Length: 157
Image 1 (cartoon, one colour):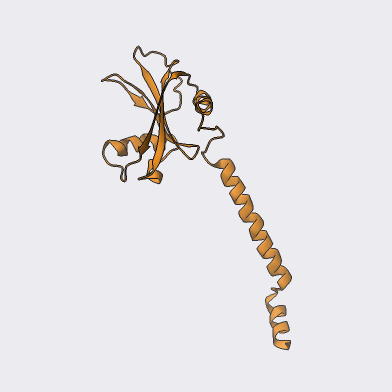
Image 2 (cartoon, helix red, strand yellow):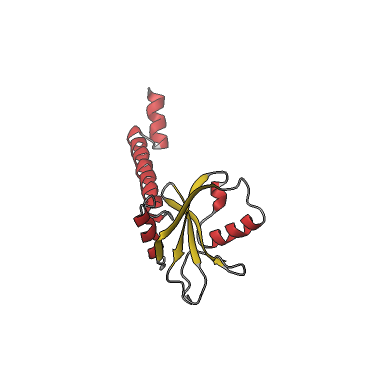
């Protein structure tokens, strides 16, 4: 008994300090979880509804023709090579990364944009949604010699 008491005095580590350490670590972990939720690139939009998807798209500065919605379920390829590697680089530049979703299913929604300036042809916006989170997206034309770029509205448009 005397040795244990002596060891506690020497180390300065008591049950009370251990309890405070465990409680402090628990609070720290809880704070990290809350901060991660606040800082994550997820959205506060209900992307399972047309209204929610439209609100998300509007938050980027775009307007859509709701009647042109096209939906399908797609699978992200198991590897990103060639054109898919190029597409993913564009996604990474806007804060998304398809390499985190290889082989997974997601929902693809496309709409005709109504406020894309300086383009006579049809311009579409496509977003890929998984678990109420946008995991990728682009804006592109249907023209053969068209263009494709990220979701964020360019100030020149």
